[in-house]
Image (cartoon, protein in one colour):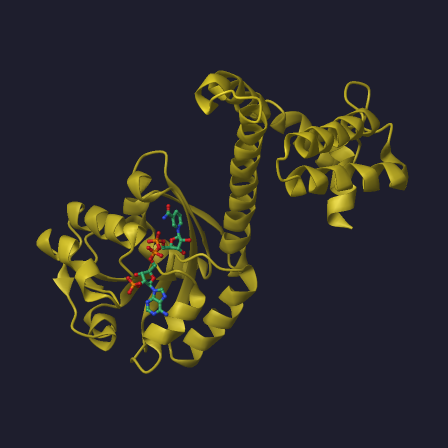
Length: 285
Ligand code: NDP
């Protein structure tokens, strides 16, 4: 199996989990972190501590970055000798930042593979974990075996932006759903229910959501939104009721107001009798 030596820069919970998995898989791993103490745990497990960022870059051709954002990459790598290096940046940022980074690295003789990790620190390396990648196909192919240690590599294409776009789309659904979950809890708590008491209903609704995926993607891809079961007018009225219930309960209503606004605009655009999936036309315009 692949035992490519590599360097991991950035040792937050994610970076530390990644180093642990690489070590377990037998990859000689060099590490560097701005806050030195954050390397202690992985060094105790067998990682090699680089004294400086320049040393960490010099140690291996394959560099894995796990940082807060892409700006941190420039802070760390500026002034190091990047010639011949492959930078696998697994940090979150906006898709346009990946293009800037690819150009910046190319000027210094390095290549960029963009990654978006679909797992939390505890799930890194778990069979259910996967990682979006985009960038040069040949660079991905060369390192896919080593990167598979972190989770199933899911290669999207040569365009560097793709992995961040898919990652942010997933985080879009995730963060919005988490906020909606807390919002529902806030509503029931206003009547003295504990979150615990509400939990079975919450679980039921979240499980039901995945059953809407097939119909949603069929409507959207066909650009046909038959509204025989749940049309935008009915759903929009309910969206307004959620706003009203929130206001009456003294719960912040910004989130349901944003949802209601989508329905209002879809109905104003003539989609009242269409399925609620016609909201896609408002979102994309
Ligand atoms: P942390 O915020 O804990 O770690 C961020 C790392 O970036 C630290 O090593 C930090 O160094 C470093 N860093 C930030 N700014 C700079 C800078 N200007 N110069 C040098 N180093 C800097 O993040 P996580 O480990 O939780 O996450 C890392 C990445 O993975 C993020 O992009 C995150 O969005 C993504 N991610 C996180 C998940 C999670 O569950 N935590 C899940 C999926 C993706 P220092 O220690 O010195 O502060």
